[in-house]
Image (spheres, rainbow, N blue to C red):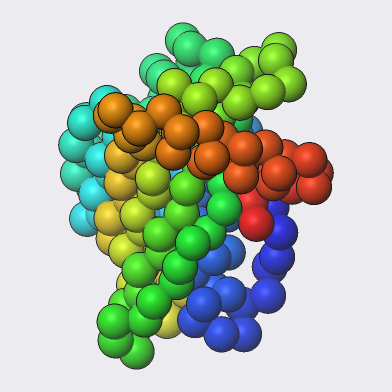
Length: 159
């Protein structure tokens, strides 16, 4: 992950996103769930809708225990404040399957994070992963995959 500078809302929201990805990459359900509001929502790549921090942890535990989940490589496209204590982060991400060194373009995704500020920091109110299928546009899929490979070549997980 790239930065822990939390002096501005943009950096704080980026840091929150990086912590979510880091927890996923480390297959740590508790750490990932801890990034969410108590009543936060997670919408998975497959359309699963999980509501509440506790349910998110319960949902992720068997996934991490029973499946060799691929690691995220991501690029933040935009962070936009929609109020002094609410921001939206949009990113693109790819995944590297365990034991491999390249992205699997079939699971490229668009991430949307709605973050809210509290006295103890920023939390995810909503985190959604939408397949970047690019139906009928294989050239767009190839461009996205190459963009994410560039992030990988830089030796980082999130840029």
